[in-house]
Image (cartoon, rainbow over all chains, first blue to last red; front, side, top):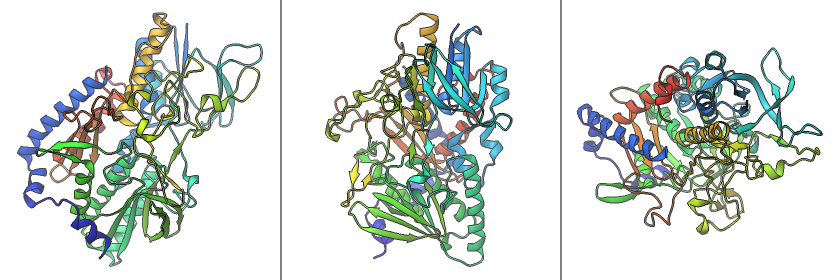
Length: 48
Length: 485
């Protein structure tokens, strides 16, 4: 068995549905807002 | 009047200089000593390394910025610290050696009241025979290295278009490397660009890392709450590697890089070789080799610095087993325990211990990812020390007034996995705190509400915005001080 197939068998693999959402613009715009809020919270917590 | 000398103008040193200049009146001097003429936004070197950005996109000349701000800029490198002065002269000073064309090799003693060591690392390619651009592998650690790597990638893509099948190896070039996140970003950007060039089938891509498992990133990995589960970052990392068809080899200490072959040892003690056509392997870091001397002329380097050349600060450096390491071991003020007017920030301070469990191969070779001290934590350290020094100068504080322990601060990281407004993606991660604290967070060492990660176009857009935002800030454009580190 090649390294690649052995590694592949033991890992989670994203479905086409998951991959679709990663670059689906309306959803990613929403995630953009959420991730920015999370980062602002992290910055606020870390700047004492 | 006080004089603050800052050695180094990377993220932490440049931040410290700008904050100090803003906080201190012009009667006080802020001096920056850096061997580099240009400031470099290093996170974007990844994109230089795949040919998507050029030197001018990620760098700018420091002199005009410092002239506008009123910062005394010396293009030089610190070579010797005299924290007690020398002979009858009791005032501390640092000996610097100029690197500019006009004064190359000229030495000068710069007196200081406060010193910030923000020198960053020495890229220790010499630790592994054949490693580095002067040897047999490539790097993205500097913009020149990254530009050279982009040229090599371009040539490799042409060869694949000509029908050749090539092997690409990306990762760490020694068992004690840090910044695995940069190698992670580079391998996925490389894969993305090869795919865009239409030659993905001709490329075998291998990620070779000193991490014991993927997703470790030198911080011992993360536990992320997602989909109703608490999942180790390893699962998400492996998933991405499988999705992109990138093989991986973990727990590897690279012992030698020959012209077309890398030799490495794995944790089981086995020695391996891997043939490559293109190898981008990061070097381990050490301190820059500053020497320290007391007033009598005795060498006190070993007192001020750890054996790896990084400066000891207010951390607990007591040797103890991994299981006994605590978040509170990490420094809070970055003040030297020997000299109250000397501080070290960013990569220049000596971490008390690693975050990833250090391991040895069966042959006794150390494979221990070093803890990252770059990016957001580095900037916060620079700012914190600058504010403490400003308080010591203007308010007469006798000890540092500000704290910024990596055991109490979080980090936001965005790791690019391919560039493009529509199809580009990046992993957006936040973790809190950076140093796991199992006393406070027994389950995962970190606060699961604030330790999260996801991949998508949103991350890429944020990464792109951060590139422009931080360069804007570093250029001290209007309102720069409102942009947090």
